[in-house]
Picture 1 (cartoon, helix red, strand yellow):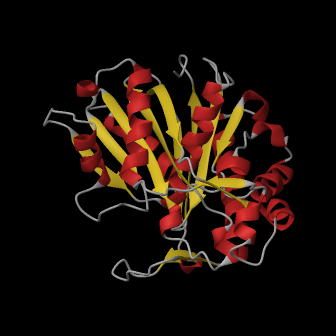
Picture 2: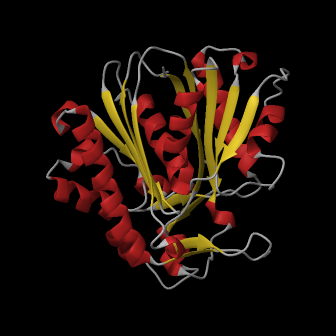
Length: 314
């Protein structure tokens, strides 16, 4: 019932290198790269979340070959909305200048799992609607404590978008929520003007490795296939050591995972579509391939999807 027509991404022009951060907190390039794999991250300067989301959305719609008025649903995955209301999805409809009124638009807050959760939501909605725009966009730099070297080195800003349409294909989804260590990754009250992200790194790292291995095993078992039948694992880019440890525990090659964390850092919900867009641009993604999407984040949530590509993603 779901087919991905196109994917696009956008990252702000301003770049913060590890050397830049070493002038702000007690850290250095070698320390950050060894512990995270991150070398650079993009951050907004005079842009809003809506600004960067609009850039990705416009490109995705153009590449899809659809007219913007053919979009039936807008799903916007984010944890850093510019406003609490109206929703980012509604603001995006206006920014894209879509005239039609019979359009469903709403936001999804599933943190770093947001894009994969939006894929699952879109898949079910495609039984009633023909074309869906998903945008996953976050400006994490707006909620980071830039004096905390444990978190400020990790995150960046970015946006990704995909356009989906109806088809006969039925991808397989799995979503999980755990509450045992909910407080390990959170912000304080939305009514606090100084709200910032806090994270218990060790707890989150252990959770992330378990989430990644659990999702991959579940998808393979349910589909009754081996990892050799999966062309790529498109995973949330949180920390290169999470991917390395998970691949070792699963006994699979790390080459199955495409990584661009070195350039963007952790962009929350935008992470997975940023990877997918880069892979499509490099012509690594081809029709008839099998892709395993997996993401994990605050909640704590983790979601995955096994997707057989019917045709080329533009």
